[in-house]
Length: 168
Image (cartoon, rainbow, N blue to C red; front, side, top):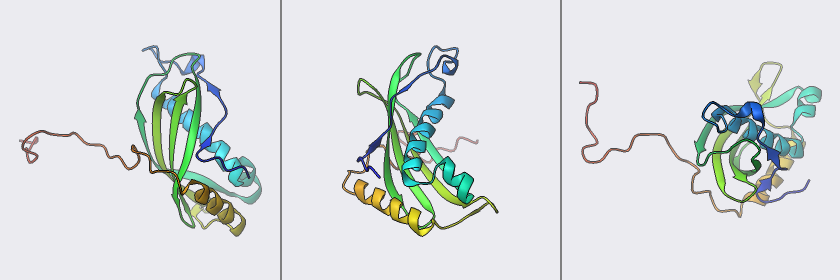
């Protein structure tokens, strides 16, 4: 299993039907790009679509936080990076970036994914062979610095009195 650190997807191109009435990539399709980049990683780990079909286990996203940094337009070519920040016997905590092929940052995504037995469906531990691949992938990413944008929260920053009651 090739373990680039962080993993970088193949090049993807923004498609015509992904462009919204503002003339840029619709927000939903940033998630399509992140998903396609993650699918390349899941295939490397042996937990992609073939795994779901054959072993009746899969990966569900339980939480995701996307930050839109710079607009993408029709024909833009991008790559998606994937850094495994943490994992345990049932979960993957990942950070991804969409970068234009010229190198500038377009968007970031931080997600928590669950390993799921499709029979339930219910969260289940990774089988030993998959757990070993996840551990090797995480070890390859352990030396990477924690991304500055990882762990961000959403909120309105207020100046002055933080206790202002807006529900008067």
